[in-house]
Amino acid sequence: MRETEKSLRLYFLIAGVISALLAVRDLSTLAKLGSLGGALPASWMLAIWFPIIARLALGCAYIWAGLRISVELPRGAAWIKTMLLVSIVVLVIDAILIGSVLGMDFGQSGITQSVVGLAITAYLLANVRRLSDEAVAKQPPPARVV
Image (cartoon, rainbow, N blue to C red):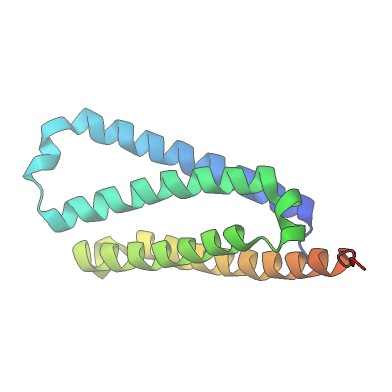
């Protein structure tokens, strides 16, 4: 399937809203737990908090990318590409945290989620690169001052 600017916009907006809402839901759940979280080891706290904060921040960035994609593609979409690379790094770190803290048996669904997320994010990055290259190539050459 060949993504278009409109399909990427829709994906970024939907994924961003879902990600941000899930992060807010998880923050709400953690707030309800209250002081129980303080009894957990630091590694567990890191494995709990890192994905929530990352999901919230990247969700907002995805929403912003969806809103700005038509402006950013002709400029090369550098920050969107960087955001997608950061997303890949966050997914790898998340999988490592889940695997090391929860173990492969308990963390199987989280690791599977990270692997699927990696594949989707790599696909998006390839399409953003392609579309930005096409948009930059369509730009008229800069005016020459004589």
